[in-house]
Image 1 (cartoon, helix red, strand yellow):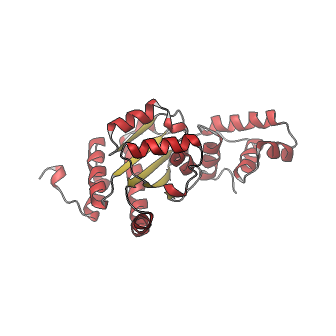
Image 2 (tube, one colour):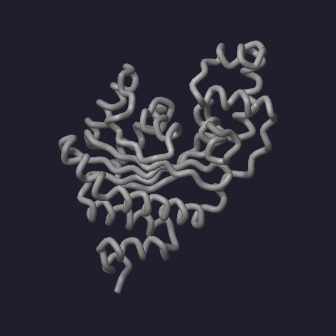
Image 3 (cartoon, rainbow, N blue to C red):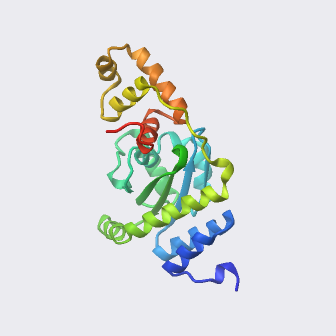
Amino acid sequence: MGYVEQGTGRDALFGRLETAETPEELQQLIELLRDHYSVDHIVYHWVNSNGDQYGCGTYPKAWVSRYLERGYLRIDPVVQGCYQRFHPVDWKRLDWSGKAARNFQRDAVEHGIGNQGYSIPIRGPNGQFAMFSLSSNCSDEDWDTFTEEHRRDLILVAHYFNQKALELEPGRKPEPSQALSPREVEALTLLGVGYSRAQAAETLSISEHTLRVYIESARFKLGAMNTTHAVARALSRGLIVI
């Protein structure tokens, strides 16, 4: 029996995910999971500290190309929201108030991504960050029912996917980061609890320029793309406590 002819029930799909041996099998499985959960799209998305992206999913090729060409990674509220959270994220609860975010959302809907979405942030070894996302077109009420019913399954399959991706793409694993200095820890902690840069600098009795030096140094050590990402990575590794 060929690979694609095997069982497509929940347990069968989970079992096949655990034993997948190639990226092509992961792509097949993500398409089968989309059909199993009756959603429009499912995507596994891994972004490394250099901004390189890897993953698999069911988004139209035209949207993937447009996303990359327009540099949407920098303004995507879903990516930014997942950096700041450790629990599943319902897209409609993110901040879409900015003009860039609204334009991005409109563009995504026009490309068939759907008006609803749900993402599970994943943090792997050495600060690795990935997301597992589902999207579809339906009412808020139907989407809330769907996500509540399948939340546990989706978290499980998200981490299965990430574990398998780490196994199949060993060259992409992040390198261990350097230790943070006490001042870098203090700076990230204050920003993490909501202080502005001016407030953090005043609390530490340093200039904003010096604070920026500490933040940039910490960001480099953590392999983070921005300050929010650095705080998230420091939290995930237990380097700061909020």
